[in-house]
Image (cartoon, rainbow, N blue to C red; front, side, top):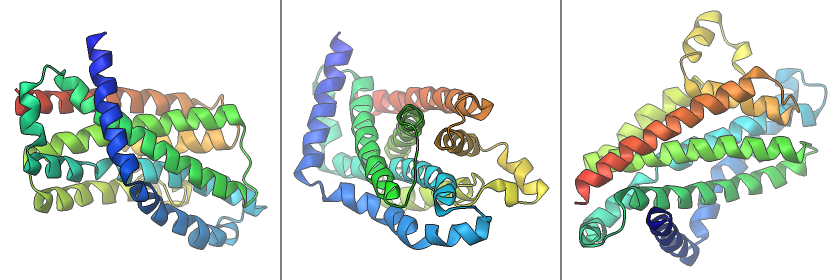
Length: 251
């Protein structure tokens, strides 16, 4: 009960800080919206899709996974600012659970990224995208797990490096191959065999395939449950590792 209360208090505080400056929600969604408006219209001829709606069923799920990955990976910059301001240092004298300090922040990030995902989905509906609500909610669960994992890992790395100058290139170095090997912008079925083989080791490629299956209405596709299982395990591992970093930094 105490852990749940601590997590809620941290989440509530972090959400209040976000709502005081909600512009960051729209800043975060700006780049995906540009992809949606300026890149997606090119996909129908490129993919030989029968309709623009079918092209969006391929592109929008990848775009949402992109949002969850990048949105989570760069949350650590805010934590470094808190470290510099002494916020984390002052947390040492509080009885709040160290895991709650991490989880409250990460859940705030999950909610923020899901709000951005809803905005993108609504915009895609204007382009004739259609998806069953149950499949969409399951896809959002996949996104939430991705955001939880990447956010927690970003916080853990931030506590390690304690510098924006080190965190930025590190996150970019990780994010670029993850992006290219997950088939986010275009399905990897168009890739050569060796590239598809390498991508099999990228857990986010499973998440993208599973999310695309959900948008296609194929709930029984094995990739849906494989993707959810893989991401859930990685999210738990990421939270456990990051919580350990919080415990070491806030004693």
